[in-house]
Length: 119
Image (cartoon, rainbow, N blue to C red; front, side, top):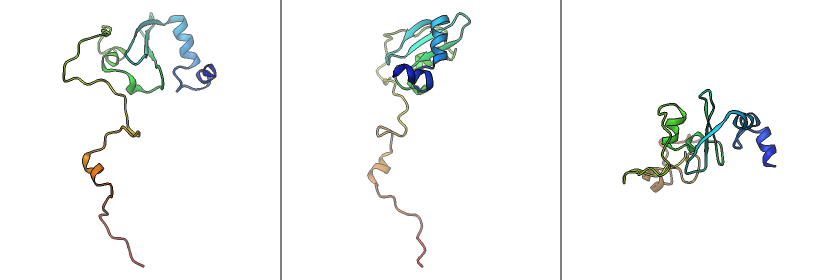
């Protein structure tokens, strides 16, 4: 079933074209803490195969810099982080974990700024 998803849909990890490209010309460069795999071809093309859903915000900042040619050095796996750095979280918009300001949470009832017409 997983193979059929990969053949006919692009949002399930990789397509059949990416699978063929990875098999013939991809060289594994590394795996991030989420299990995403990063590849590079001999011509310099770079791509990622996601562990779960295909979502660009699943790429941590250090790998984002590498895949977009901002930094050509491969990220260090267990790089020391500063105390103020937080763990990378993908985009949570549209989920229950999305950020909601305190003001909206406290005032669950939204007050109308207008009056309805009375017929």
